Image: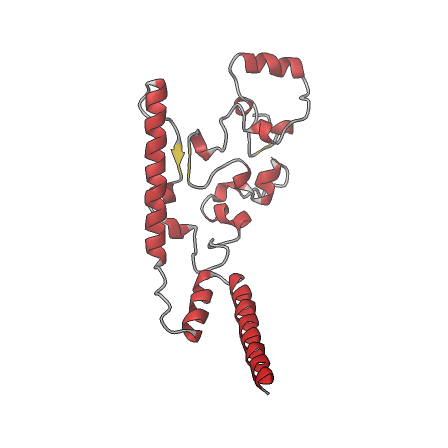
Length: 204
């Protein structure tokens, strides 16, 4: 009889643990706001959720500190005052919520491939006669550009001499001409429009 009671108690404990593990696993798939609502409904004493504004401010200050350290390191290594670069205006003005929605699981106000054209409408190409660069055609601005800051101009992920080579590994047509042009310090964008154009190969 005693062993039966012990087994019953163990069975209840196992069922409880299984329920907790299953519930915890399901909550992992929820966004932070939903997870907090569920936990506060089931349990007492759950700490208050950190306001999104506080998370944003902390993140922003960490990024600015990292940028300052990077600029200081660059200045000490090559003797120049800081580094050239670029900042996304909403980021620089701390308007994070122009792009971010921290109540959603994705964390963005629109899907990633639709986000940039909310403001940058001039890259929506409606003229069917134009040739459109692949990433532009699908709205994948992040193929070349960073969303917050960059050590390069125009928020480029790499500098102008390297960015095209990230994807374009094929042998160039007119390779000798391209080699001569590159030897003279020109970049791809001196002749080619990186977004779209009426001429073949996006020539300007």
